[in-house]
Length: 217
Image (cartoon, rainbow, N blue to C red; front, top):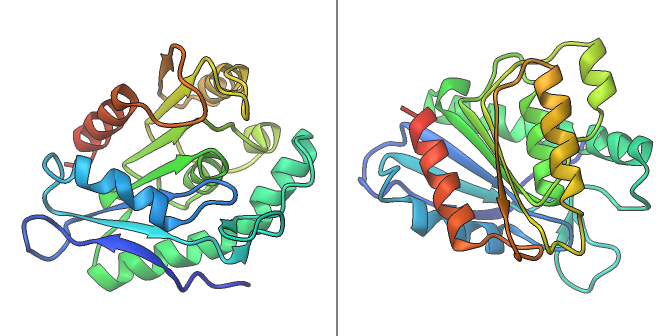
């Protein structure tokens, strides 16, 4: 198993030992450098949270810079499910290591993803032995929904945010994910960002902060 060893972090604003962990999972060809930029906007609402933005273990094969959770060879559901499944053990091990390091549990953990990172946040978060406190997914999709229906899954609260002008992952992916998650008994909140492309807009940023702060008590 490939191990996650690099990334960015932001310590609790309170200056105290972390009482929560907010894990930020970046998109394809990006890095923890991009995702950690969310953290300063959320610190006021989550003063005791440690923000972790790991780099994916693989260098992105299609770009000179950046990382990938797995190589995107296509958007067929089977290929996406297989890719997310192959990347999950590294994230699970990283989560286990960090929770153990700070004496925390899944009740103290929120997973936040963007694009391919959303696929990973949902894949990992719904399959943990215990449910994380919350999952936020920006501009992504759900992989392996049929497999989830047949096997073990937990039911953390989920927020999905997606722009109507996203040229990379169509907004239809959010509606499909919402429908599949509800069929699994997962509590889902969704927000459509009108006219927003493949990015996180200020409204989505605020909604994510409020959602995580509400569930990470």
